[in-house]
Image (cartoon, rainbow, N blue to C red; front, side, top):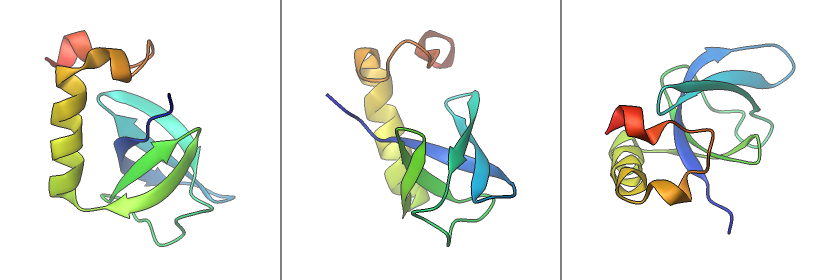
Length: 83
């Protein structure tokens, strides 16, 4: 199963890249599909790409659900530390 996870854009970089925070983990992602994204925005991240800019309330609701079902987030997101 594939899952897009909300992430907060923390830094814009060259070549359509951005750094995001996903539950305390930072990753560099491509923003080719969401060129309108800015620092402070929440984006849905799937396979290293932001696929949609989302409302902060929606992002928080989704994060809360992921915290309830940590097996959905995969092994590299440290949900135990966030809960």
